[in-house]
Image 1 (cartoon, rainbow, N blue to C red):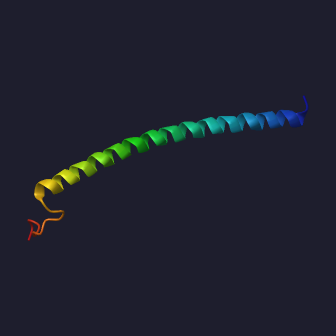
Image 2 (image 1 turned 30 degrees about the horizontal axis):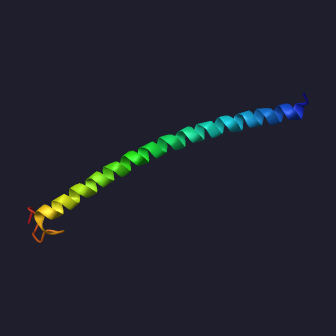
Image 3 (image 1 turned 45 degrees about the vertical axis):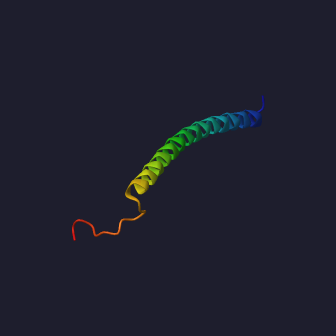
Length: 66
């Protein structure tokens, strides 16, 4: 095998390894994003429920420290 071919195979091997690592990181990021999306949806539902219970989107009263 020629030296150039060997160098190319080493580079390809390194790039394949890097690609696998990036793919794993992307999969983990997608899982984390999915969890955050579910949490945001739950929070949005809670806010909507609170708005329904209070009857108004923004209370028209002063904060307790006034």
